[in-house]
Structures are given as structure tokens and as C-alpha cells.
Amino acid sequence: MMKHELEDQLKAFEKKGIDRRHFFKLMAMAGLLTAASTQKAKAFSSKAKGKIVIIGGGAAGISMAARLKSWLDKPDITLIDPSDRQFYQPGFTLIASGVYQPDDVWRKQEDCIPNDIKWIKDSVADVDPVWNQVTTKNNGKIAYDFLVLTPGIQINWEKVEGITQATLGQGNAHSIYDFEGAQKTWKAIQEFSKTGGRGIYTDTYTKHKCGGAPKKICLLTEHYTRKQGTRETVDLNFYTASKELYDVPFFTPRLLEIYKERNIPINLNVRVKGVDTAAKQVHFEKIETVGDQKVYTPFVEDYDFLHFTPPMSAPDFVREAGLGWTEGKLAADAWVMVDKETLVHKTYPNIVSLGDVAGIPTSKTSAAIRKQVPIAAKNLISLMEGKEPAEKYDGYAACPIVTDYGHVLLCEFNYKKEAQNSFPFTLLDTSKEQWAAWLLKVYFLKPMYFYGMLNGWA
Image (cartoon, rainbow, N blue to C red; front, top):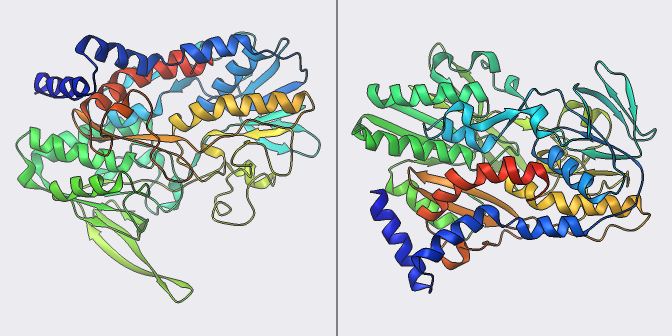
């Protein structure tokens, strides 16, 4: 099958005037297009001075540390993060579908943090943006001149009644938003394909990491059962708290077609309240608007296999420090109140925030972070130099929705929810799933993350 798919993909490129030799060059470039930005990074430098503290050592925090170190002549950068390991979180879905092994998606944190960055291995308890200091749990107060706020997302497992992070897997209730949880999910999917039954897949009512992930694991389960010859024994159902399956019009029609073709019913405006793992029942609420009021109607569904998405928010200290939005759609979960173009805080101009914690109207993905980092870094340096931030982020994000083992619907878009396809995928019909995008997802993006983004080269 893979040879047939490759031939079809090659022919599609050949119709665009790209021969086979150049096809493989282009695919390599898709993972290594950062060479140009590497040269640009070396060419750009600043003599600006100031003590920079970065909260968070994930994709955004370490990438910012690497960029700032490269662009400042005499960087003074402290990074606060408690983690021992750096995870390539987009790989959790591929662990849960048997494509990756667990050890494929992590590196030692000490190997990922750039040299000459002071690493305080601790958690943040409080931020005082008036007095410019961060309080850690075990290392006291740390002063800053400029703050990079990139702590990532807080997963609120306790907001799903009957579930905790420690009990993932009990009652066959699973979630890929956890490293061990992704491993348990893969074991459960293999068993589910043998025993059959009813599978329920949900997203959540808050903004969350990679909005496409719940859809991916649902579609991969369906394809896995077909590969095993047991599709007729499973009944799969997808429940979303949104009013539509996907909110980028260019890609939505094909995604809806795929669910229809796979015989997976989509239930809209439904959110999970709790899970009775002993009875294997999901407690839902149907969300309806009556006049100017929202009405929540409870109902219960039985399951044999469950994949759920927990609610998420900014870390508690963000809300407590008054750094989150106080009104509007982004206020409920305290996403950081930044200008959506400059990524500079609306109240405190010596703070920039990006990544999953940023309160901006785009998806929370590593692809978005990759575009945000150089903009936030240059704008921070401008602030250090006493200048106005001039770089602007257009909301670019990408979500490679894995539709089966071998195909990906590569969704790239901006704040306006317009398709914004990057080279070489401008040469293909990206309104449909592509095998070339599967190559990108499985083989190129992870190396680009560890060796490109985290080194400030992507």
C-alpha cells in the first residue's frame, strides 16, 4: 500500500512540474526550511541589556531562551522549570496509535536547555508584575527586568468528576493528554479492537492543546480496527462541546466527509461532566441557547472504550497574579492578556507571553509556537532597547490531523481562519488528506522540534 501511495503522491507533484528527485529534496526541505532563519538569526544581534527570566521550559520557553541567547551580545537569562524531561507532545497521539514508541518522544531536559542559560529547577508559586519578581516554591524570590511567560497549560483533571490523572485507564477511560495515558490508550485500543463494543471520544469545553488530537485518535482507532478486520464489531461516536466539528472552513468539508465515510456520528454542543468508571458511563450535558441564556440538559451514555479530553486553563499563578484576561471569551480560564500581534502584555510592557498560555485567538500547537518565537523574541529585544515592538504575528497555526495510518489532513491557517499553506504543500490540494503530509508528521516534525526549534533555528 505504501508503494502505491508514494507513486500517487509522486505523480501529483510531477503534474506540478516537480520530478521524483526533487520531490524528496522538497520533503527534506519541509523539515529543514530553517536554514534561512538560522542565517538570519546569526546576522541579527543587539547590545541590549537586562535580566530576563523565562517561566517554563517547554517548546516556547526553551525556544525563546535559544533565540535570545543567539541575538543578545551579553544575555542574562534565567529559566525556571521543574521538569526532568522534555516531551515532544504532538507525538503522544502517535504513541497511542502504535506508530511511535514511548522513548521516541522525550529527551533529558538538561540536554535541551541551551548552554549558558541559568536553569532553576523549580516550580513558580507567584509572580509580582508590579515589583518585577517571581517567587518559586523552593528557591525564594527571583527579580527580573523582563519576563517571558511560557508556563504552558494546566490540565484540570479534577474537573471531570470521577477521574484523576492517577486513575487514567480505570474503567477503560483514557486520555492521550498524558505520557503514561497515551501508552495505556494504545494497549486499550488493541484490546478494544478484539473485544468490540461502543467507543466514545470527546473534546472539552475549554481551549486545549492541539484541538485536532481527539479527532485524530478517533480516526486512528477506526482505521486500526479495519486493519485488524474487526471494524464491524465496534461502534464509534464523537462528542464535541463546539457547535461545529472544525472551525476552519477550508478544511471542514473534507473532515466531515471522512467522519461520514467512516460511519462515526458527530454529536455537537455536548460536554463531559463526569465519568462513572465502575459502570462505564459518561455523564454529559447538552448545551443549548434559549434566548440569551444557556441551558444545560444532562444525559448519560454507556461505553466500552472511552477517550476523553480534560478541561484546561492557564496555571493558577497566572490568574492570581492578575496576568490573565479579565473579560471576554479568554477570561474564564485566565489565558495571559497579550496583544495578539506583538505578544506583549497589555498591562505590563516588560512581559511577553506566547505558547499555550497566551490568550490569543488561535490554536495551541507547536507549529503556532514556532512562528511566535522569533516575533516575541525580537519584540522583547525592542522593548529592552527602549523601542516600540514592531514585529507582528498573524495567528499562524497548524494542525496535522491524522486521518488514518498513512494520511494527514494538513490544516494551516491564521487569525482570519484562512488556509495558509506552507511550501511545498502549496503544490498539492490541501483540502484533502495527503500521504506527503503523513511523511512530514511522522518523520520530519519531531527532529525539527528537538534539533531545530529548541536550538532557536526553526
